[in-house]
Image (cartoon, rainbow, N blue to C red; front, top):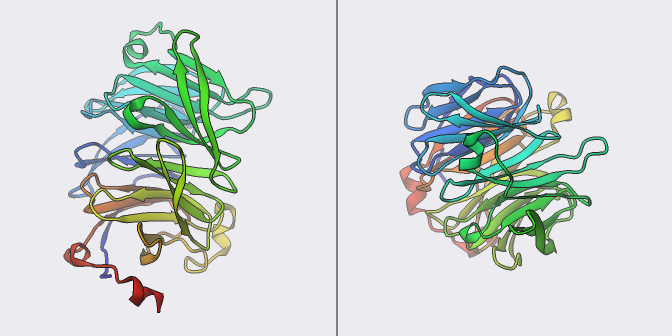
Length: 337
């Protein structure tokens, strides 16, 4: 595969926590362990603006609604914030009991879920609320529950937003569904997919499958209706992030050596490059180098013509595939030899 050139986005001062494209793919949003949140143009890599927090707590997650009018962020400062995407104004805040791990809008942008971490004697929480309630000030949760066995480390909406798929510290994937009458969230399915902590969850564009990444050195593709594992992508490193293309049968995964050992390790031996795998044959077909620390977040452009990666080094690398990428045909027998 040919050389893939990248734009380097260097404004973040701390390790990147998460990056996400908006629905149109013309903007990239990013958060790191050091505020503020940022938004970038994807055609030029120009930073368009920041979302100022007024505090120094690490920002762990973000999401953008379908028409790019609202941004939601979660932080280690026990806070969920709702932002106006255009003006950068903070519209509302919600205080949580512990640090926020994940947050996401529903497909129609009217509902938000978030999960929190365990701290001291406080159990992790999964909560769902409507956007109208969120912006109104005094709101009621649609549903919430405390998770007492294994905390949520990754989460995303399932098909038709009927349930939430969660990945857990013990390597399991679960379905959670809201019981509106009791204002509780109940477990519908629990499958042990990985052997170690789930670090990332992504849905395919048609939401028929979910891609999970794990510290057990694998990424796995599972059905979104029954959580049955159908494809496994094996690596030689802990996997922190994974993404799946809407254009071709490709997944990209990234991770690397634990962050605490990065300063003692050469970028090559630390295994910080992103790997591209063929979905059908589960074989590696390419690598993209560039980061000097573990990759923490990956995102394909909505049209599948490029991807971005965010690393422990605080750098976001925005890649566009060359023309040869679209003509590339995988020869399984050639790669087997």
